[in-house]
Amino acid sequence: MRLPVSLALFATLASCGYRQPKSTSDADNAPTITLRVAPAASTVMTKDMESPTLPYTVFAISNGAEQDVTAQTTFGIDPGFGQFAGNVLQISSTAIGKTTVAVAVGAQTATAELIVKRDTTRLDASAPANAAQLFDGAVLDSASQVAVVYPADQVVVPRNLGDLDVHWQRSGTDSAYAVTLRNEYGSVRVLLGSTAALNAFRFLPDEWATLSQVGTALQLEVRGLDPAQPTTYRTSATRKLTASDRDMIGAIYYWGTGARSTGSLLRHDMADVGTTAEEFLRLTGAGECIGCHALTRDGKRMLVRFNSDAAQFSASAAIYDVATKTKLVDIPNDDHDLYTYHPNGNVLFVQRGSMLRALDGTTAALLGETPLPSDAVQPDFSPKGDRIVYIEGTSLGTRGHHVIRTPGRIVYRMYDDTTHTFGPAVPIFAPGDLVYYPIVSPDGEWVVFNRAATGSSRTNTDGELWAVKMDGTHAQKLGIASQGAGLANTWPRWAPFEQTVNGEKVFWLTFSTSRPFGIYPMTVETEQIWMTSFSPARAARDEDPSSPAFRLPFQSLTLGNHIGQWTEIAVQVE
Image (cartoon, rainbow, N blue to C red; front, side, top):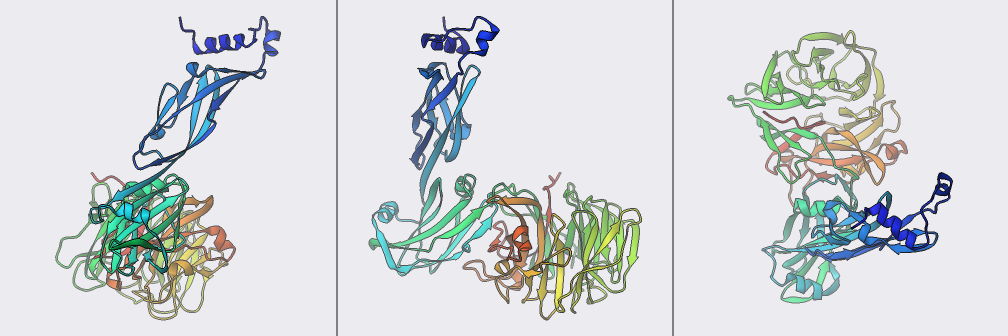
């Protein structure tokens, strides 16, 4: 008859000279029992879909005596790494990274560390059948190099980005390429064939996730080889990427235009990796065009401004229920232009020249209004719910109140949630040139905005990204993200959640820009939405808080994409 594990262990220890205590005092003097797992730490090297096995042995230790108790041990491990058959671990064919093996004998427990490293190779249909052998047998030609043009070196991305694009220029006569992404736990190599001068490739979502979910420090390399002269290969400089410590969540709604007179609202849920943005709302009447929009943080209601005739600024608006795409109420054409919701979603604030109005967030009923000494342009409400930030400046006037054409200043006003009115203006930043599109960070401490020496806020090709603390200190250019002049950086918008990158707090910031997307030239008509990280700690030290920007991969290259408004969730459409 087989004894229960605890009794079996007791019997085993007894054979080593241990006696069961006869009394409480005897029990108090009983020797300590510990478990030892062998191997205590293992690193298993695997390739492709290999599924190796690893046996474990467990020992009980008391008073220096050690006894094999493997047969009485219960073994456990994360199912993603494999499963046990007795004491033998069958490692999963997709396992990669670090995990813990847990063992138990009765009430006694212990753990062991397991690291699985995996190198995988995928042969694309375009590559020579023997590409792997060619690259493995070639030596480096250091006299020439593959030029990678996207992504930028030192880029920081959400670990659930889903799709990683890689663009490069052909090296000499090379027509076979090996694109490799690696971290401390392994690598993913994809072999391709191409004779094009400019090349674009995208890792599959599972290939990206294989590495980004288990290690945040990543390296990218592209090698090129001429199959007719396969003794040498050329390589790119290694580009470093850093992934966030956790998945990014939330949804982005943006305005996509094929031309400035038409368009629709699209959305993307960051949880839906590897998918393209879906068209969310389009007006079908002649001459109708969706444009500026605002959403509640919970994503349940949306304010949409649209043109209803051929005149560019003939604008009216409506509030929609997101789940049903049902229009709840029209907002009369009363020269309202840009809107912002209170964080609780119950109040909607609108600009109308030198007036700030508070409307009911569902019915649009007037709750209160505050007359101002000058135009209040491009308002944004702090996520803390205590103040509104906007530009004091001169707008284009009737039918274009959101477009700033003269130098102004960024101010805030404290909000009275009883009367729905605002206190006096408190200056934040007044540099003497054009500032526009201010947006308050998720912690309510920073304002990011656009800045340009001349022109207006509408399609300003020289727009840069800047940040300033709410108290007016630490004003600085986001030079790394802005990159340079002539790129039409505009419409910055914060994603709603704080994240960490290598333990450092960051926020995600999106903006529209006409900069080239790797090998693809862009114009102001095909602006794309890019993302950068923002480090409050670096900003507070007067260091550039941004990182090299990257294009959000779910967009269409044929649309001009603007005003990426974020919500905490993507509400399911009924």
